[in-house]
Image (cartoon, rainbow, N blue to C red; front, side, top):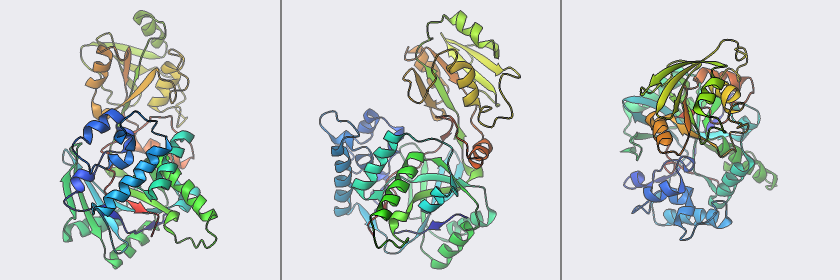
Length: 416
């Protein structure tokens, strides 16, 4: 059963929160981050991507970068940009975009639940990226980026959240740089906190949506701190990590499209012939093809769109991972035709989140930054749950959750 715990959040002051809040470190490049922080010394990107504050180019994994992150966070606390709540609280986090609303709670989750698989994962992590976040936690002495999780919708929990929203004023209410309305309430009533923790104690599983590397790093730091503390009690802050937890029905998964930089030596005609072995092709001309159902794909090449439908018996429909559209494209096209067997590390393939729109695929090909692009149908959340429940792993870049959680609004300090 899931454990959630209130915590004393380190939060920006109300007048600074809109300047502080920033997109997650891993969805913006260094160049994009430098533009976003121009004339904004309060942006949390100074903590999350501190390489942007060096005069000369610097390896983001350099120890100087992590030291800079810790120094910047300490400076913001000293300057009064951040204040820490006096008592442990739970927070309600509401995101609104295009009139769609999702409401979740901000709380700490247990590293033991992660280890015991109450918190379920669906992605492998890379050691280098894990170590990056481990170093960031150690030098900031905090969890600075929340992990997005979800649970199977529970009407009692939803009703409790809505009741609090109806009867209390938000502490923050602003629009972030990605045009998402951010509204936050503090739940500081002990009876309500107890009720929510008891409700979650009846939830069988939590599922990681975004933040597998941050979660793994928080757990490894916590376990290391346990071992080095002879007086460990289990109540220390390092036993828990920062999470935002939503009901599954409210989340939006967008497609995660693919672009490939070259045709692996094939002509366009040869490429189409190879693809037709496993797919039915329909010429769409200038009309963009955005799949409206599973097992359909779009392809853009040389100014032309094609619709692709995978042929029957080309894949195992009973294989929960192999029947994912990202797997079908990888196993029937990307690997055998383009020779890209390890998409996680091959620089010939790139991934484009659906939030950028299908026109971005055509732009990349037309500008010759890529030779061919593939549009996909979003991975259904029920498929993700099924795979996570079975203890299986999805291919890299299978899901793009939108909107993204802002970093810097809540910080979980490991120093109580």
